[in-house]
Image 1: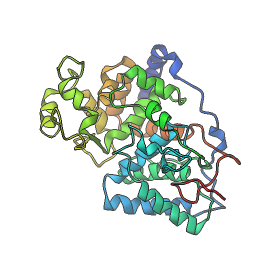
Image 2: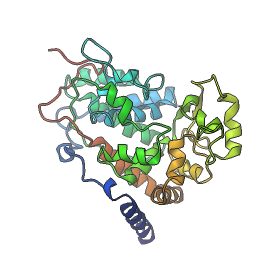
Image 3: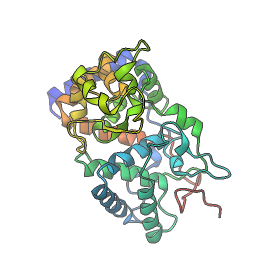
Image 4: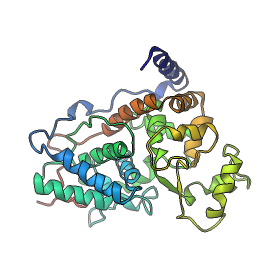
Length: 336
């Protein structure tokens, strides 16, 4: 990074600190307990196995990279990065898959099953499902053109799930910027993490039901969202009518939907963010707007910040040591 770029980053950080002093937190507890080399001896082929199966899944379904990345995000924001999102409902578990953020949209579970089966064949009960999600998210980013990073490893898997946490803790498409900032702050993440991590919306899709209000009734007065480009809204309305079509899918980045790049931020600058929670990064505060402009101007800086923020997110409240367990099947808790 050049001195000029470094000065830009420092200026943004200063603005953010002045506007949101409480949003900058110390690294989450447990960060030092994870190690990128955790499986070097116990399962040296683990990362190769994950990358191979993620690559095959991505070749078969270009949407899968975004889906696997999203699974990791939705896992970490609920009770920490503990693979709770992967548990099916049982006598003792109410699955997070049934929560509002996940039902009808969370996907990729079969890919995780395939990865876990291959890992169990190579190294039984050694690699956690939580680490599978972290590695698959990194590999999905790389395979779509994004940055790579060393993934800290050594998480263990939870013994339960939290549908309440899934409903309440994951940022929603219609949340205000202060609400989103608060939800990130509660996870030990600051606004740089927030703006960088939402850049994952450079790939993937969203359903009509997640942004319909922006087209027709953003403020409850029957008017479209004034921060959405009218021409873009006109393109969206035929497949996202006032009623019906709830599950119709739309690219989060309509320009380069399958390429991990900084186009997402360029879209925000011209008011073509799909979700309200996207566009509000540019319109909601000077600090977040400066980061949007920074990332739109420099893909290199975005990639650097995104990689670090993925590590930060992956360090949210990991289960380590002898706590939790290493599930042999990611969908259910071991009972022996």
